[in-house]
Image 1 (cartoon, rainbow, N blue to C red):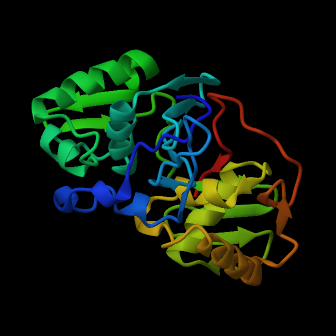
Image 2: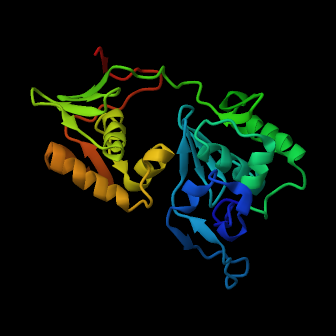
Length: 262
């Protein structure tokens, strides 16, 4: 429902059998948003304050709105469809069986049988595109048809370069700067943003689950550590987030990143 904070994932209803499929979702800060049909009755369900992002998809769990970045469009999902898509996005491209998807869903949106998961996914595909969700012997997973080949060289922006394989930074002629996993992952997001600001919540939700801080606020701590390593002038606070110093050059769809040979 547009304009009303209808929560797709009530945290208190999550199955104990869900394992780690939704752990990253419920680590983020939660808040209660009022919704009234008569102007006075609140909906007392925790609502996630950050969209889930993966492979060019951005799901707002509080409304069921899905933004398709490559197509520059958006579609609305039902509560059950949004709950299924949230599980697939959180899996980060790992195939999940219908049983695993159903177990990870909140009870309020869980279909009576696992077999009905396939019907829900078919309806999601009709809305966001069949190529967005792939299927195989191991189940379903979110895939981005525009994802480039894995980078094995050096990503660059201005004088700053990142060695993807060995996970260190090169800033001009200076010696290599060793970075921790979280620092490297956050810096890579800023490099790939090409000087366009990235908000705290967007950085947090874009990070791989194994490199993601426990809270959104902790992204600021990682940025602080990066500034200590690279220099405070290298990362600029702007646009409600951070960007790398240098001219903003947004990358068009299909345009490859600057990759240098090792």
